[in-house]
Length: 334
Image (cartoon, rainbow, N blue to C red; front, side, top):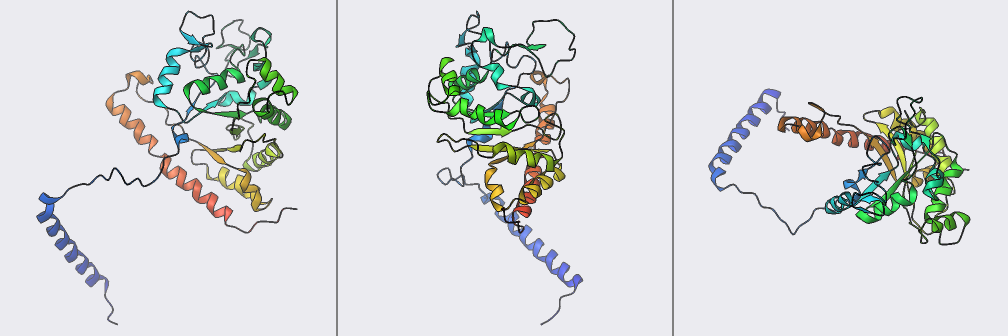
């Protein structure tokens, strides 16, 4: 077989390229694009078009929640204009109560009669000595589990609850599942739900196990978080719902977090991966210009879109690590 040298190879390549370019130029006038509208290549998961609300600033109070007695038009205390706007964009899923707020939140504070619910220091407060009734300073807990799940139903979204791993024990997590999903009058907690006006179970499927556990959610190592994740989801009651547990994923391109978490899970055997439905990667595009979204220029919007484009390599990078670890031999779980 004749060997082709580098110079001959490059020469032939350039010659072929010239022929192709000439051929393309002669056909340029006949070029066209066909859009095959009846040949879909796949289904986009509706959960991708999800949203997120947190007890931060005016997002909840005076935002989502105005109260039943407000002069602002509302549906059961939820701002009606927001409900109508959200219905139009059809969110697949909506996450609550946070964010960093989630790992300071006790779900029991937000159930029962509102006038009997405790007032707590807001996670985001900047001055703990400030005396104020503002919900931006103190959390009144008027918007709790029942209110959020009704809001989700109003806008047609699947609820996604983020559990407190930093400051509550695992028992509180599975009892929150019980409160939301246990059949009517089956348990004390399901009776408490009914007493708050919701007799039938909410059947919440999506459950986040902590949030930003590498930072405000506990300042853990990935190995520490993997141990907590396994413990929190062990033997959680299903009540006929196919629960989807979502792990607290990495901060942007922190490959060590993903590798450490999945390597630790792998120590318990192949079955340990079956308990993880999703991996919540965190990436923030930030802001630009005057940092006022309603005043962005066209160029500033393109700048933010450029930052958002980084999601693709982040997803593929973390996915590759997950695939690498899941394909390794694992220790048989005893």
